Image (cartoon, rainbow, N blue to C red; front, side, top):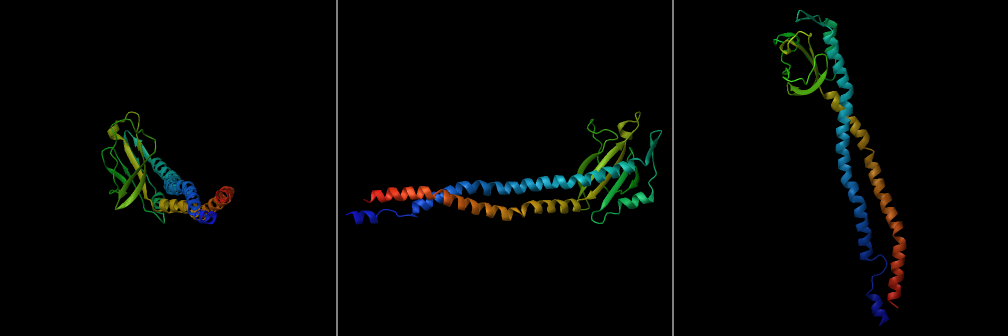
Length: 222
């Protein structure tokens, strides 16, 4: 009778034991597999911010350099932009750089006439002398622009002079991709290693429970 009873009892390494191991493993690994795509998305977002910063600073410096060449005489802008300064703006080997200087009445004083013009806000969200950033597109390419306005105290808003410098975003994209790759690629080694360590830790941690179960099952067969 006891032999028949023992043959119906699950032995070591039974299906229920494996199910417990698998369930615990799922609960430990599922959050990891959920967080990983989120980490990739956050990495891409912050990589773009990091990549933008140095190039935005360079654009601000270009705008400031051009602004120094504009003189306001009795409310009228006079521009003296040396050929060397123009050449410097066009010297980028990766991106295309554009600029324009536009008087308050819409007259192009220098630069690219087809570059999208920014409409002057009617509120006080912009102030003369401050440099601002914006995104646009030009000739089918994404464009990052820095701009500022020049004005004298007695000038009305309609007389402000607009200075803009923009460049395409190839360098930014390349730098952002390098940052993302430097963070993500090591994860292809770290995450499988973490899975192996979790599996090993669980298998070792469940051994006392397995032995206890085997003892209880052995007593039940007697």
